[in-house]
Image 1 (tube, one colour):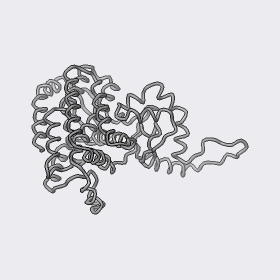
Image 2 (cartoon, rainbow, N blue to C red):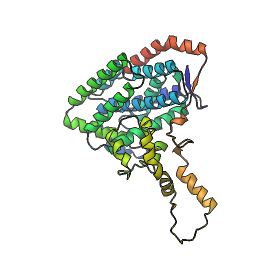
Image 3 (tube, rainbow, N blue to C red):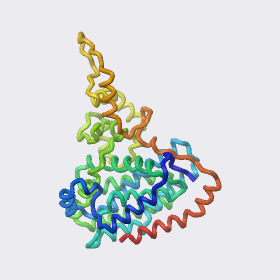
Image 4 (cartoon, one colour):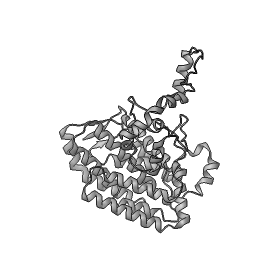
Length: 361
């Protein structure tokens, strides 16, 4: 078995209760805390389209697979275990019964947009369907990476049809993670199913689905080291519309691709390197260049420390020049007896998940 370890106890049971409470209370169509501004959310609810559910879950699920794959490779987990994890998670995420339940459920007159709580709970279940588990803190870090990268992708998109392109790029990218014929057929089937659903929705509904995806992500504002290092995100959590770097256009043209893999490409790293000091200085309001003849001014150490902590205190960042935020997710192999027990229960667990979510409609 593989474990996501953060020394924080598992709270899956608590999440389940929260989901049940949300359904019973009739919570619909918002990912933000409703108590903050009930009037604004009431207006927003009328515009949100439940048909966005499948796109939210599939795209976030693919981003989750990117992170899991990065950690499996970084910790040199045995290939057979890595293949099993990636294949199992992909199979449950894209199971035709699960996808159909999302599609059919969203067409009902009383259909509801999934809340962030619902999505996080389901994706946590999907992530742990194989030989690993994830605790509350781990899922929190993973959730931030998933939501913020997907939010940035939609931020730089300009047309409703870009949502379908992003989704297909996500699916094509996970198809490259230990590909085999069975996964290839599953992903092709998913793409065809989503394409039929998209084309059958009509132009107005497509725009509504696209807008709902963007609105659903609005309340997330975590600072991600990968996006900051690329110059795509500011220290207030906002994104930059235009970035004066050659590689920016390449990322925008391929939104949905695996950004963790892309950022490790040598030509991408070389293109970013000269801008790092200037970017850091800009975030701290420091002028890195001193004009000739200008007197150097002493730095107030206490003031600098306070400014640094305020600016970088809650960035999803780890040590190392290539930190992406994935480093917070740690994998550890477990004993052989636990692993054997997990394999024996895999098929039952997966079927239980599929049955549960198939009844959501």
